[in-house]
Each structure stands twice: as C-alpha cells, then as structure tokens.
Amino acid sequence: MDPIITQAFLAEVLVERREQDTKWSTEHDAGHANGELAVVAACMAWPTEYGYNVSIPCPDWGCVGKKPSYGRRKQLVVATALILAEVERLAAEDAECARAFDFMHR
Image (cartoon, rainbow, N blue to C red; front, side, top):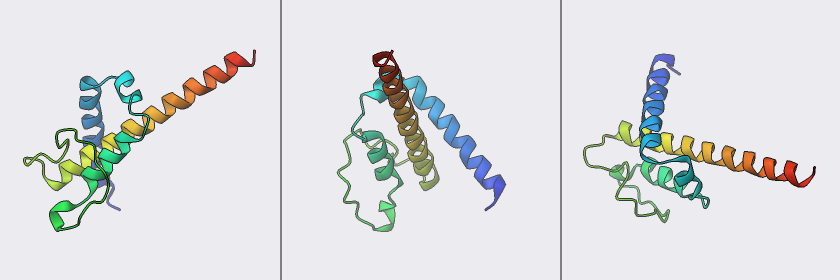
C-alpha cells in the first residue's frame, strides 16, 4: 500500500462527501433506508467500461457518478463517498434506535 496514494484518495473522498452534504441533508439520506445509497455506490464502482455487465438493479438517479466527464478514479471517489453516506445513515439510525430504547425503558 502506498500511503501517499491512499491519503490523496481519502482526501478526495472527504471533499466529495462534503459536496454531497451541501446538496442533500441528513434527513434526505435517512429516506434511503432500503440501501439505495449503497446500491448506487456499487453501480458506480462497477467497472462497466471494461465490458462487465452489472446485474444490480440500479436506481435511476440521473447517472450519478457515471457522467461522461468522470474518469474511473472520480467514479470510485463518488462511490466511496456514497458508501460513507450509507455508513453515516446507519450510525444515525442506530443512534435513533438507542435513544428510543432508552426512552422506553426509563
């Protein structure tokens, strides 16, 4: 593993995630409770330009991340940022469940 390449990639992912955060709220992401964020990330990460066929039923989000101007690296950056959004959504969901459980057992 090359730490410089890894750090550069992770920095790009965090910038992308911040950009996503300015466009879509936490409440918006919470509305994708059926794994749509992860599915779209998988669709974007899938290397279709190499001739592989994706069998994942991808939501039609206007080809998010598959824009012709995006190179392969940018597609992976966007996909990774969406995975991070899904992790954040799950953490918020878990925290909400924990608060509800605590409230019910007082």
